[in-house]
Image (cartoon, rainbow, N blue to C red; front, side, top):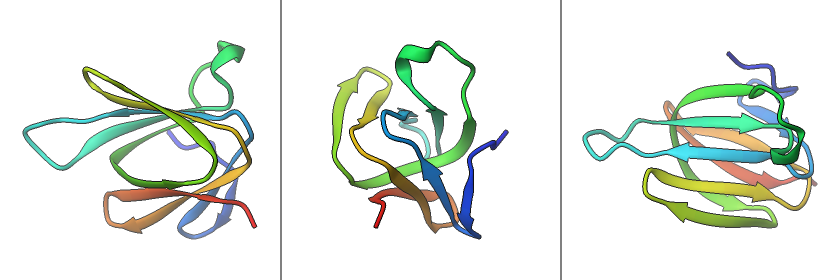
Amino acid sequence: MNHLVPIDDDRWHLPNHAQVVVYEREASDRGLLTIYDCAAAQKPPKAQLLGTLESTDASAVVESNPTGRVVNLREEAALERTDDDRFGITASR
């Protein structure tokens, strides 16, 4: 399921206030990224992707939890595939 707006083949638009929930698995490098338009909207996720979030280069609040971390964006950004199952968040330019 991926309903994110594409920028190009390996980049997708993330709106201001998007929330990325990162579930990390100890047994493998591949986790789960669940992306919401806004945490407060209480809508279904816009996307769920298998992989790991390697970096966050946009203004965001990152909170660790027992299963991974939650990234709450404070500006528009882009989700970028950096490798097969690896992603990064970069500020929109």
